[in-house]
Length: 535
Image (cartoon, rainbow, N blue to C red; front, side, top):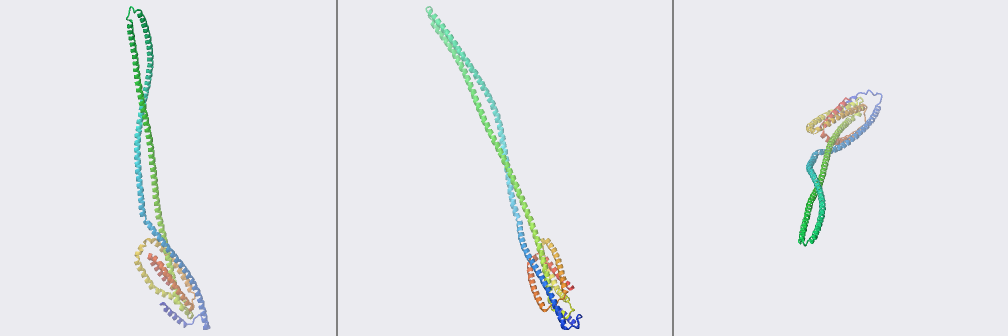
């Protein structure tokens, strides 16, 4: 605003100085009206070229605005993604904070499983002790079985002896029966002999009786003698018979007693052998039961061992699976953090690119507005009245004034940047963990700045080529261009405010990037001014 009067004074002074001189390019024969018409035609041609340039610049600005809108949409999308990633990161951190409880739960379960294993070991030890006891019982039963077998063998030996004795008794009984038969035969023989003797005696007695009858006369006492003799013989026979019967009865009694005694011994031996057989059968059944019990206990012990080994292997598999899940969760967390860091770096790079484009747009708008505001009112008059004065001189003077006016502002901004650097050193420590991402972002920023500088150089070259052409337009077109520039400046300010609002959270997180962007913007503006002054 302050540079306009100086420019007007310069232009008026130059127009006054040139008005006294005759332009060398015009012929003195040409009338003034024709010269004025020719200059108006040149002005119309310049205005048409300027309109074409303006339409081209409008198209470029529209394209830049579209790109800027797409960048803003991309920024909003990245902000939404950042919010999602922050939420996921918060969940992951909560899940990362949870493993302590999970570890306690796993440790509690492991303690329970170890207690179960210890209990199983105790049960196994008890089963082994019970097995040892049963083995002792089995050994005792086997010992008793051997004793019973020996007793059975003794009983069988005694049974054999008893049987032998019974056989001997049977043989003795047979001999006795044989002797009884012999004695009976002998008794019968003796009876026959006695009867024959009695018959003989009776015959003798009868004969003697007959003789006695015959001699009764001489011997009257013969019958008495015969009776006496008969009584004697009968008494003798009776005594012999009684003695034979007594002897036979005694023998029979002895044989019966011996046979009864042998029978009783055989019966007792037989009963004892049956008792031994019953005991042997009972012991055999007990041994079989003990063997079955021992086998069942061994099977139970084997099943318990297999079950415990299966449970231990299952628990080990569960522990390894949980460790794998924990390791996978840690890997996922690291991957999510890396993705979040990459997205944050991309967002920072996009923020830097947007800021660079915004600075470029602002510089372009300021340059165009300053050119239009300072050079437009005097371009037509200088072309009409002083052909030797070039538009480049006016543009160079206005840019130099803008540079001189912007230098104090740049110094103030540099001081503000230094103050902000001192104030926000504490915030830089909070984002120290994001150093690697920031370094990458700075490298990308430098690359983008180099690309932006290259773009600016190309634009400056294009603008220099366009400014080298004659630029003249009418007052009406200047007013319309000024109104359009004002509207574009207002729209650019609104968009810049919206971008600053969206970029504030990122700039709060990265104050040193903001400072660097400010410094780069100041340097770029100073370089632009220097380039324009050189042109």
